[in-house]
Length: 242
Length: 249
Image (cartoon, rainbow over all chains, first blue to last red; front, side):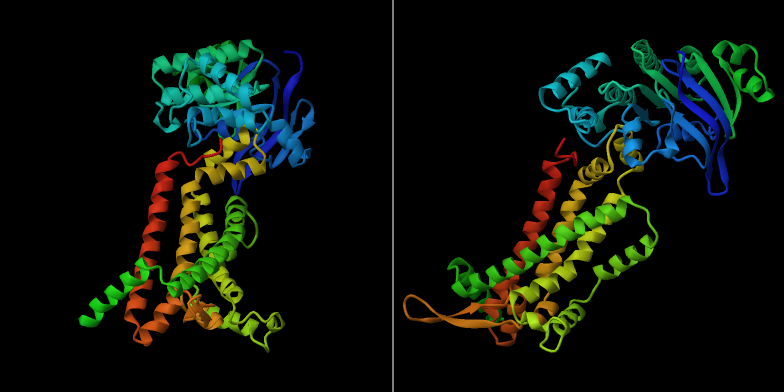
């Protein structure tokens, strides 16, 4: 954890007249778990999307491993995107079998045949869904979808895992399972950046937390600092719910 | 009433005995509409996917043009192609008027906007988060386009079938540019029978009803209804066979 994986300086993102992100300055270190914490509409998802290159910054600079994302052409962006994965809220899956979903990230990287099948089996084993290959993805429960999504993310061994509300609408048992999977990926050296409004989730998983409010970063610190030494009234009020 | 019953009897006889003239009409129909729809699909499907997945200036206008094209009156297309291909027209030197090629051009113009328009609609209906999942899992623009195709597979099949339905059912355009020509040919037994050159099922139905050949006209009608059934059956079969949409991964 000694060099920034992401360097964010003066980041702004506008959607028309609406300022979704304003003056974000942040370094995210390799191997850490960083949580964007805040209420709905705070800009957490937008920030994840900018990091994943799905959104271009309106101004400011975002660098991944020292390379400015805005300076990259489409090929460069694809290279950057192939080192990370963003799992959106609700774990959308392709309209196919579980195998079909897990195969996609491998196929776009030119991995097929027996190697693909081996990885599919291993990935499903790792999320406790052995034997689910031929299930229709549409028939899975919310918890199962989230676990398949995590398997789909892990299957190509990404450097960065971006998670948008990974346990939204999950029951405590599935929530615990998903947290366990995220912790295991972190132990394997994956940098995890998650957006959440759940205080318990941020507290349990994150090395550091950035509290967002209306597109501005209110405070950045360790979970302990955020919950015990809030720097603003908003952070104090928001974390008091814990 | 007797004429109608006689017509049905004649129709069954023509179909069951595989009447050579009827077969020649079906062949012309199959070649003209089949070729036109193949060409329309080759243009309309990729263009539709491209338009649906990209934002560019003038997209709204292009969508309006395509929608207008979906409702083009066949007669208008017929007149337009006729003027293009007539001896004094800009493409008159090709000598295509009153040939199956002219009919293919007319049906291509009619079917392409339908295939493209439905393609745009079904691909745009693919949820944005699914397309973004394709990107975020490392897919290139081409990979994501394939995701869109797989997710909307049934809709795309419907687009092609709708284009084929349009081509098979229209009569105005191909009558004008094809002329509904038949010519006599000698059979092995020394008899003379008619053979279609540019006469399709729909054109033949119009011409031969006027000539009082109700049996022929009813036979064409039955075949066209049968074709419509086969098209719908195919669409339903595809939906049942590929419930996931994705067929490649």
